[in-house]
Length: 343
Image 1 (tube, rainbow, N blue to C red):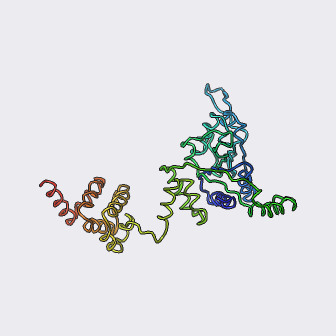
Image 2 (image 1 turned 90 degrees about the horizontal axis):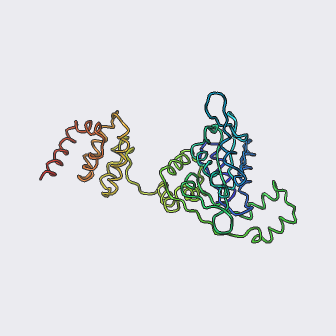
């Protein structure tokens, strides 16, 4: 992912108060730390830059002390943000940190707390590592750590560097003009691969990002790949396409069955089953049906094939099954199903 796109993504998440940690994976000197610093400078918020290779576990969780109540308390670390402030905690060199330090930041990344200290609401957590490709003296991060982040590969590009060099970087023209003429000499490509697998929690984080609309089109594949993996990310991009053919959703059935009835009648068995599962998931959270919802569900049930009707009733919670069974159309179909099963 291009440096400017990563910067935009982190900035968007910060402004929208979306707390999805990113793990910036890039070669030495590519500007991972500068990305985060530029975001905090531009937004006028705080930055706590923790070089974890130089930390001990006590630096993170604080030291124990007694205060006269016969209990052990933990002193808040000097770097820990104060309530009412905003900023980013940047965990640099995460895969160079000792094992006990990496274990200490587990809780900070996911639960936004370290030991007894809770991170103020206005603070965000991001991290950076060099790739584990044999070129660096780093530790391999296990899947449990990686899945706590949106993993983003930092891709350097000459145009971005030149813009920085002419402006904020204040690089002398002798150097910048040389790179402009010899762009292949700015950096050396290294093989970087990320092994991200989808988890239920990664979809929770994806949901936060989608709701906040912070994923721009040009960064879509990189963000999705960094959260749920390449295969799932590609499938999700297709799913997000408005032209992609999707099964009728449970929400559509509940709201206005008449508008989707023709599509229901044309759906394949697998598509009908998807609709059934989605509708059951919604009904499992409900105690009752309001307005036209009951009539919509009944009509859906009547229109679906026998195998889908059976699956629908089997999966429904008892309270919803009782509500639907009071309708004569549903009761008649259920009686037929029972009789056929007894033959």
